[in-house]
Image 1 (cartoon, helix red, strand yellow):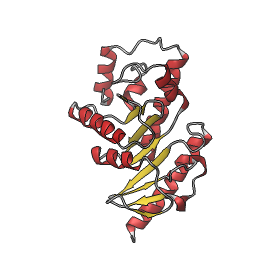
Image 2 (cartoon, rainbow, N blue to C red):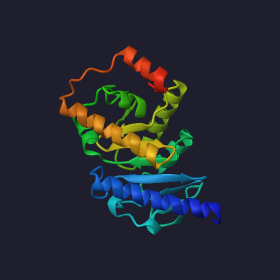
Image 3 (cartoon, rainbow, N blue to C red):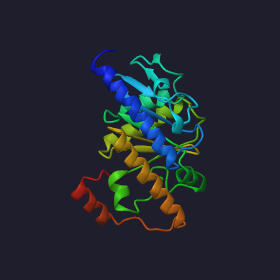
Length: 224
């Protein structure tokens, strides 16, 4: 790789390290749980298996080519298949974050609102910035069958003109994505904070009304 691609990979390395440090410092990740990836052209840069996201080393990040062959860095995360399949299913997915965020994992243990929507639309910013988030039934970490379930959900929502930006893995936490790191982070943060709000209020708040959600669709293009 030379020229522009080398530059893009270097920039993605720095961004992944920055995001991992930020997530760790703010308590969104712990120990070696979670992973981050960026799509660069047809290649993917992803955190290594069992890496601690708060202490990433840029040159140890795994670079994987379009055929899934590793070209640099330590052994890629066991969720590589899931990350690659999400990018293939949603062309807007260029940065993906998976965490074991405390309140979202707690939500799966306490009981989600529904299988299709793990949280009710209780705030306007949840509707606008996150949207629908389906629950993916429990499978062991790295199980390739999860990719089939997630991509099926992505396809269903694209067909219904309500594209999703996240799923919640039962007992394992959220997987979120966006066109860049800032967008993916915004989804993760709003999703985790909404789960925190709902649990703190004993899951009692009523959802926004249909009229309120229609207004968000009209005013802001909310995909709900």
